[in-house]
Each structure stands twice: as structure tokens, then as C-alpha cells.
Amino acid sequence: MEIVHLSSQAPEKESNLCGISEKDLSRVGTHLLTKFHVLMRVSQIYDSKNVALHQFARECLETINALIQKQGFLSLKILGEDLFLNEQRLRYSVEGFNSYKYLLTQWKKRRIGEVHFLEVIDEKTLREFIYQLMALEEGGKENADRLNEGLKRREIFSIDIHPLEDREEGELTKKEDPHEMGKKVFFESIGAIKEAFTQIKGTPSTDVRKLKRLVRKAVHLIMEDESILLGMATIKNYDEYTFNHSVNVAIYALAIGRRLGLTRKELSELGITAMLHDIGKSRIPIDVLNKPAPLDEEEWGLMKKHPLLGVEIVLNLKQLGEINPRMVIGIFDHHLRNDFSGYPKLFRKKQISLFGRIIQIADAYDAMTTPRIYKKIPYTPEQALALMLREQEVHYDATLLKIFIGILGLYPIGSLVLLNTKEIGIVYRSNPDPEHLDRPQVLLIERRGERRDRVTLVDLMERDGKGNYRRSVVKTLDPMKYHIDIAKYFLMARKD
Image 1 (cartoon, rainbow, N blue to C red):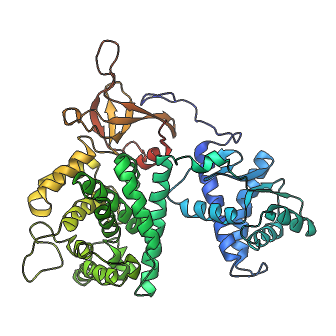
Image 2 (image 1 turned 180 degrees about the vertical axis):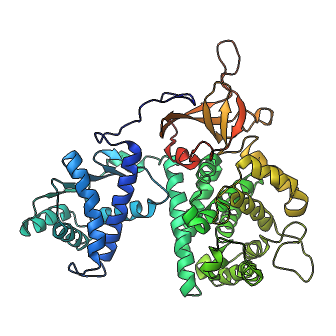
Image 3 (image 1 turned 120 degrees about the horizontal axis):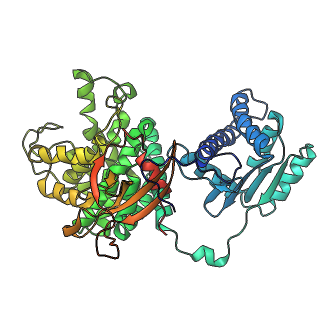
């Protein structure tokens, strides 16, 4: 991949969709999948003539027909675990992942591999297609033919259906790319914790078995290469803060636990504890959680109850199996602070648990580096760590904080940096050698006007023919000032 310096102004890259940039394609694809997701779900509740469908169908039609008019056709195709829009692979996005996963799962269940819209369609045609699709029997090998025949009986010839292609035998056993696995674990974990929060509001128990499976996968990834999930933790979804935050805290906690030498079983328990550390907030009124101004005394009193509420909820989660006491205590402890100035207030002091001390650090760092309703501009990673170091005697375990800083590096993962070559990049992986903490691996950014759509991974340990380092960090930069979304580059990056 090419590398363009900070001042570069090259034309924006276009996708295989003639005249449509990759950024526009991603936005259009996310919008289209979201509308399909809604229509498919609604079709299982209402009949095809229900007026509630009209708005959703109309919005979906606008996107479908706009693309058909521009390209002459529209194709949505499944290949493996990927979705392609007009032969261009759609990338995962924070806001669109649930719809992406739903469509992928539902079409695979019905063995539908591709839907080809040959010409502009009307609302009646779209409704007929959705209802016939969702009525197909799961696993039917002839479903594509049945759907084609059903549409033709309704005199619909503008949609062509192709069956799901079976993978070659070798592909089934091929090891999954760890970076793609990391993306799936991250986004599916956000969905699973969101589902848990939603269910708990209406019932004293919920099914967390999916969350346990995802945590086990996260432990595997952390043991193999912690930088993969640490990179994903740079994703900060403002609209889904509570759920995104829970997953990020689990990632940071697992990284600390790994450095401490915890066993896989202990790491799984730590991961679940961190994932559920804020589960008590599911019992806090939404207007208090999302209040854009400072909380008053009564509201703050409610907020301080969430660790105790979390303990109560976790003790009722039967699917957790045998609950290790340190999991419950970790949730109770995560806001106590090192000098016990936090909450809940204790009648007598006790030793703060290891899980509690780990989660305190992970929780604080992610909260500081994430935009909030009442703090739109977050701290940079460097600023957050500097503040935590100043407060370590009061708030944090000094040894664990030192370990955490060692994980993130001298230039924390996700930091935007300026190099001596006038290139800009994002710290992707810290250097494990303590003598070269200033030489991490960096994603160099190629900027093309308003489009920033290429990255190249370089190692700052690389030397030229004379033995000099090819690149060095000059200083860190504030990504807000450069309008750079750090998380998107981690989503783009793939290991070669």
C-alpha cells in the first residue's frame, strides 16, 4: 500500500462500484442492511399488508432503487463470513454489526447465497420478496429454486435468487484469521451484553451462556496476541456507551490478568466479572444514566447503588454455574478506590480484591478516553495515563497500574503520532522490549482529502542500509484536532 504524508491531497479512492467511494459504499451498505434487518424482523410479527411496514419498506426501497439506477443492478452476496454489495466486501462497523450478523445468519439458515435485483422495484415487490424469504424452511437445499418459483408465480421477474455456495472441504478446517475473529468477538460481545442488560430490566435472571462463550474466545485471543483486542478497544461508540464500555473494560482487564500469569479459568472468571461490572446500571433509570448535566444528590445516590445492584443480579444468574466469590466481590469492589473514598461506603475497611483493583484501572482508563454526554472531548490515551499516574496513591493499585502502562506502552495503543518522516500513524502494537518502548508498531495513514482509507503497518525497529532507524516518533497528536477516527483504522487493518 502507498503511504502519503500529512500534507498529501490525492483524489479519493473509489470502490468497484463505479463512481461510489468505499466510504460511501460502507454507509449505504450499513443503511441497507439495517432496513433489511428491520423488515425481516417485522415480517415475523405482522402480515404483508400491515401499514406499519410502509415506512420501513419505503426507506429500504430508496436505497435499493438509488443503487440500481446508478449501477444498473444490485447484488447482495454471501461468501464465507463476508457480505458483498455489488462484488465489494462490506466492512464491519460499530453501528451496523448487529444487522450485518442478523442478515448473514438468517440467509445462511435458509441457504440463500445471493439476491440479485435486476431493475427498479416497487413496495409490493419488496414486501413479497421479504415474506417469501422468511417463510422458507431452514436448511432447505432447494430454497433458492423455491423462492425463484414463488416470485415468478406472483409475476415478479426483477429479483433473481442464488443458493448458498458450500465451502470447499479445506476451507472448513482452515484456521480463522485472528484479526477477523477479534472483530467478531468484540461486536458480538457488545450485542450479548446489550441483550443481557435489556432482559434483566424485565426479569431477575437472563441467559448469559453466549457471553461466557465469547469471553472464552476473548481469553484465547488475549493469550495468542493481546494487541488484536486491545486495538478493538479503541472503538468508542457514544450511542452504545454502557455496552461498548463493558466490553472494553473486559479487554483491558484480561490483558492485565494475562501479564499477572492468571490461568485460563481465572482469566475467564475475570473476563465475565469485568463484562458484568456495570450490570447494576440496568436497574438505574435511563434519564439518570444519560443525564447531560451533573447529577444532583438524589441521582448520585441512585448511581452509587449500581455495584450492590450488580452483585444482586449476578447472584441470580443461574447460567453462570458455580459462581466463584471473587467474581461477586470484584463487582462490589470496582468503585471502592485504593483509599476507600469511593463507593459503596464500608462500615469497616477491607482489602480490595484483585479483580476489583484490576477492573478499577480498566474502568477508569476507558471512561477517560471515551466521549460522554457530559464530556464530548475525551482525554487522549497519553493524557489519561498521566492523570492516573498522578492519582495512583489515592485511586489505584500502583503495581497493577505500572503493569497496565507496560501493556499500553510508552505511546499507548491507539495514540496518534507524528513521525520524523512527517508521516502520521496510529500506535498499533507496543514493543515488548523494555529498552525500546519508544519503538512500537504503527499504522501509517494515507490521507486523501476528506477520505482516509488506507493504512500500512510498519515497525519502528526497522533500520535502513546505514543502520539508522527508518522512522521515529516526534510527538503525539490529538486525533480530535485532525478529525481522525482511530477505531476505523483498527477495523481496516489486517495482518498480512
